[in-house]
Length: 252
Ligand code: PEP
Image (cartoon, rainbow, N blue to C red; front, top):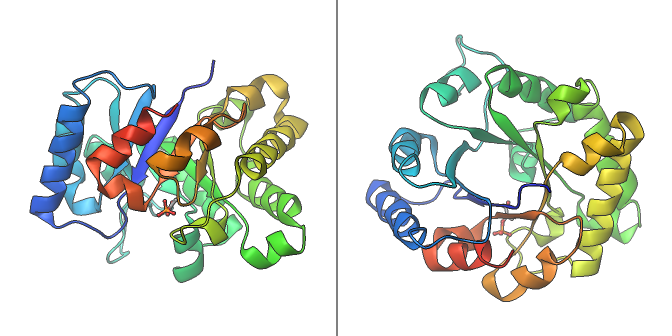
């Protein structure tokens, strides 16, 4: 069975007091076991160490960075490396989020380097892919996502690919209140798995959790997660509220 995962991307939200309160609320809600095998939170970099220390007290709670640089160290002002993330007690790193692709010009080729850097430090990449609205309207979404996967991941050996988590996030559904239908999500997740299987074989492809992201909330999570290839969610807005986030983790 694949891990069932709910990950919360806090983005550039929450000051120190708010971030502390949020992780403490999540900690206390997780005193009761949740349905997700793994709950992951991705706070801003400045709170990673303290969040990781708190997460270490709760079985099933883990911490992710929101990005990392492709180099391990050096003169890259304002950046963070996989080595530094690892030293803070972080286990996962979100790579290729559409906001990083759009606002910071991250290409599929750059992401291939970042994925390698993360794996080299024993961080698990949560690799994001997904199409813009124009591509969906043209019916080209599978081709577009396949190209993202091919150009960023297909240089990996099978043993490395096995360690990844994939997040399918249609850009038109992120922060818009508009979600993919359960059927659209399942279709794309199956297509991603098929594409991975075409290079790595079904055993490897069947091993990878594929999360859905895009305006997921307690009211729609159960329906979306019901798809057989949907192994959980990457949650933006709703992860900023502990009750909503844990309700989503209990929708699996
Ligand atoms: C995201 O940014 O990864 C995301 C899914 O955001 P939201 O849940 O707010 O749409």
